[in-house]
Length: 274
Length: 342
Image (cartoon, rainbow over all chains, first blue to last red; front, side, top):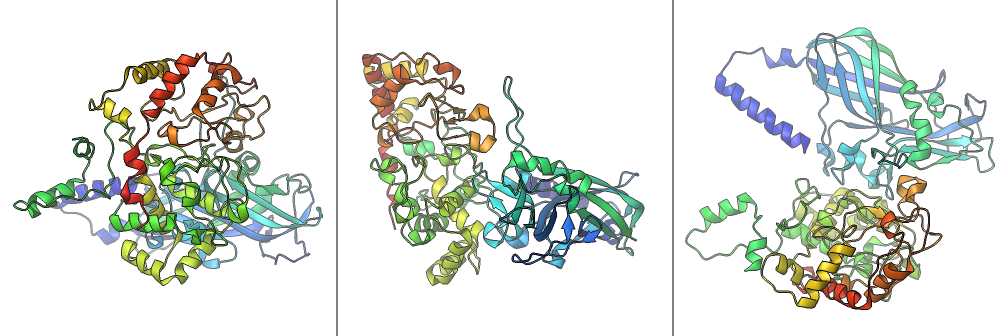
């Protein structure tokens, strides 16, 4: 309902604005333009190429030297914020809705669909931006709005845990030669943040990570420029020192935490097209 | 009259329309399908602003709730384990729920009364929003053993359902969030707020001296956990059923050994009707439940500290407490025709 409140606030401001009748800049120039964000998935220095589920070709190695391939790589990106050093700030609008067309600010990146890897932000105010921040996963604000459509619809492929209800922020699945059953699945989820009471130990693990990256250049946004931020996601870094023989299946927040802790270092801004 | 009093939460729009549209007529507002907040209840937790209850939405939810199309082989509906006569708990014959192919579940299906006011759902509290509750029943192999994807495929093949979803939500295609919204619209209306206890709280009913004595005993011996007007503090506790609990309970959700064998403190609304009791339905009568607290508590490391020495309840006190618990029965709710299959 934050959205509703901010809509009301905006409407109130608009009414105030109109009634005051002050001169303002042309909205076109004030709003600036669009900014694109492209996610590109890598394992170390190799670009990810998904294999079929029957494949026995293992193109990648973990840092510990276990060979593997990938059949599925997908993750949620949300709450995107761009900031600049002169007070520039752009906060992507957020809205959860049962109606797929009304979902805003939540993005589902999946390797098998190139279009999903490109996020288009619109109406970014003009200015100079130096940093991008986003959430990897869907936090409490998104989950607690209830059933949602489109990329958040479990009947439409949204990765979701029923039993500990919430979205799986990152899914990495594939095959490895080091175990007989060959298949592994790393599902990173869990969004509840509960501070332990006195005399108790940590309960729940909030694996939604806020990732802040510096842009490699001062990114100019105005009505004639449409910059593109190119972010590289390194699956090898997320897998860290995984031992597939010991941890082939990860399906709970407590175990997923070991991988969630690697997320912040797994994303880098490779470059910005100005 | 009680009815008019509890429905004070009519939407303002409705009132305005009434005032302006019907000034000279004797038209009554039909509030059968209007969600209301009982004044003495905790504030509703459900996101009604995302999914306001409408008559058509409620009726679609009711149809889904009673339709075994949600299960893999068309044999199990929500209503199999949640029956109005038992305040939408399971029947007494099913301590554990029965799913497709007569598969036995692991826990007792709880009452669905007053779900709109609960912070978390299921015995282990793993679900924190009502919309997501039915996904568990649909996809659990010993319940409906179906996938949500296939439920949506089946509903889209039905012209009746397509027409209903179009009519209720103006959607050309059935999708899971709208199906879940319809079910939630039906479930949030399961408000049980007209027991004799509620009427007593509103100053409209007199309880017998036995019931009042039971209420006092309840307040001194049970209210540490069964607190407030819904008789639950919504915490998770081990109430000493087993020296070595087999069902991990809350631990499954928190993944913390301090929560092993803990379950939600249930609301006691309509408890007279919701036998058998406990997460596994092991006690058939309220007498057995109270005897357990008096002399049956088993020690395990997560046992609730307040139960270390049990709760001393004499035979006489037990009878009085049970008299009080029976004032929580709401026959208006279990006989409310709006929940009958239309």
